Image (cartoon, rainbow, N blue to C red; front, side, top):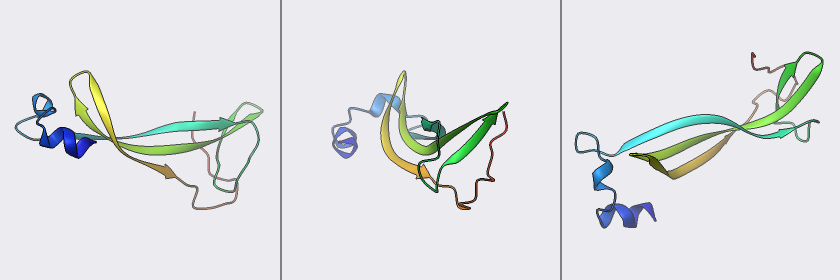
Amino acid sequence: MIHRLVRMKALDHGRLFGRFLVVVDATGQLHFRQRHCPHCLEQKQGEQTRYFHQVLEAKLSRRGAGHLLETEFIENADPRPTSRIAN
């Protein structure tokens, strides 16, 4: 779809200095109360522990909008539950 929009010049007004702007962003997604797989990341808040997955997304940026190019899950390389994200 993106390839077609580029070829149709439908996205040309979103160019910056004549080039397309690709934004890469990591975000938390899929939150759970219990570990459901060995790749879960964990975050402790007091006595409560939350398990979650993060994704890395690449988007073609436009004024006021963006078009998703790719999504990649970020996996916990060490399956032991020692990886933590600071609050």
